[in-house]
Image (cartoon, rainbow, N blue to C red; front, side):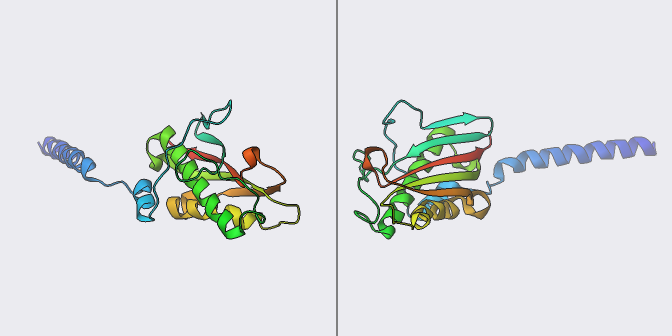
Length: 186
């Protein structure tokens, strides 16, 4: 009898625990709200236009997504910004352009994933700066995008490897182009 009573007591405990956890799951809140963070920071994601060439803006393989180079549109997302950094744009202005490209990259991620909380880590950025040969502040320009990702995704998910490269020309004479690799979950 004692064994039977212990067995019934154990079943009751398991059933109670199962019911408790079943009722608690919907009440749990997500730990990360990337889109809420974007709004809290005062940003809105631009709606990306169709690609300007024969490529896809994002390609997923396994748990990695590769984002093609994104270029800076004006706020209306119809016209490209053009010119060289240090000639037509200051380093500070180009930094803001890189930040906007970061929003474009995040917008592309959102369109692909549906939920930005699926981004587990920004793995790498490669930033290209259209500038004269003597210009050497490319890292300060690309910091605009890197700093945005740190703010939006936090240090755990937003800190990444990076290259910042100066070049004498970019497609359509844009001042900055940035591509990205990110790790995502299902």
